[in-house]
Each structure stands twice: as C-alpha cells, then as structure tokens.
Length: 69
Image (tube, rainbow, N blue to C red; front, side):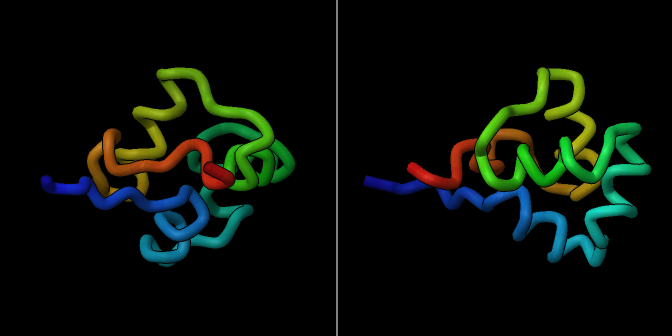
C-alpha cells in the first residue's frame, strides 16, 4: 500500500523560502489568518487553498490542512 506524502502548511511555506508576512501578503490575508491555517485552528476556503498550493509550488492534495491529526 502506497502512502501519499503530505506536508503541513508551515513546512510548505518554509520550503518555499517565505516568511509568514510574505506569504500572508501574497495571499491577501492577515498574518493571524495564515497562522490559524498553519496551526489547523481554521482552514482556508477552496480559492485560498488553491492559491496556497500555487504559491508554495506543491500539489493541492499534498497539503495537510489538519496538522494535528
């Protein structure tokens, strides 16, 4: 059985070489909102999720939007 590798939003951002303020500005959201997404407190809507994948240059299905699970 093949397990798909998933990456947290924080790890994806760091791998993309971006700070939280840089990523938040590129996405048009506050740093607080981005932090909530990274912590898994809230999740982005589908448009922002697609934008995140594009910004971090990774497939959407590789992102773990619930890092606590």
